Every structure is written in C-alpha cells, then in structure tokens.
Length: 177
Image 1 (cartoon, rainbow, N blue to C red):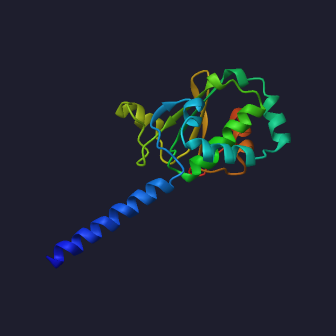
Image 2: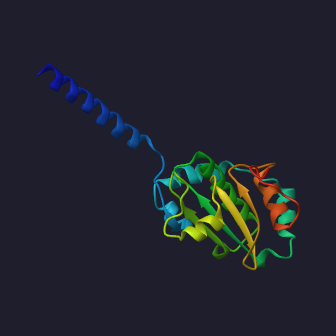
Image 3: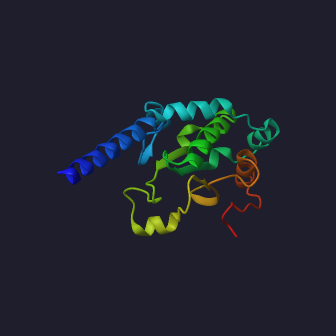
C-alpha cells in the first residue's frame, strides 16, 4: 500500500511539473508551411514581436541590399523551429530586414520543422536535397536556383550575411567548413 501511495505521489508531481512547464512555454509548435499572419495569431506572436521591435539592423547594409538589382528575382525559404531559440531570434530579424528593404513577402516561405529537423510531408529525395542540419536555415534562391544559405547563426550579422548571399558574393555559413 505504501508503494502505491509513493508511486501515485511521484506520478502527481510529474504530471504537475509537465503541466507547469507547458504553461510556461512562450511558443506553439508550428509544422509545415505557414504565413506570418498565422504565426502572429498564435502565442508565438509574443516572442516574435519582442525580437522584431528590439532588432536594429545596420542601415548602411540595408541600403546596400536595397540597391541590388536582382531583389525581385529572389525567393527566400526559411526552415525553422518555433521551439528553437535560434529560430525565435532570427525569424523576427529576417522579417524586419525584409520589411525595411520592401521585399515582397510573397517571395518568402516559412516552413516549421520538427525537433529532429524533419520537414513534414516531403519526399526523402527532397529532404536529402534540402539538407536541413540546423535551424533556422534561410535559403536564398534566384530564378529557382539556390544561391546560398544562412544556417543557425550569423557569421557577421544577419543583414551582412544576407547581403553577401543576395549579391552573390563569397559566403560560407557557420557550418560550411
């Protein structure tokens, strides 16, 4: 009988701890393709808006990006985990940069991945081609061809890294050894 009471007590403490942890999360896991409006309609808006407002990108670099002639030829895909602190840092920064350079949001695709960095509902061949090793992964395409990618954190700053990618300059992301 004492063992049953001990087991029940441990179970109650475990469940209570899990419930408290879930309530403390300031994010909601989103998988697959979603829009900025869909993200903002969840509790993800809290971290998104906080980081968006706090980030102040370098205006000189933004002007360099704006002066690029190929912006309308570019598409951006970001593979992220709303559960991931790096994604919660970089997504709002990316969106702010894109807002400030008047980048067409129809050319931005956001895709939520699992904790094991799997993209829902794609073939094994496509997953191998994408090669998402860490999140966020920001892939910049020109006319359907990958120019380069930003992986997890900036080599310099997000806007400097994006400028190098968009200007088709030499760039190696943090995991490209």
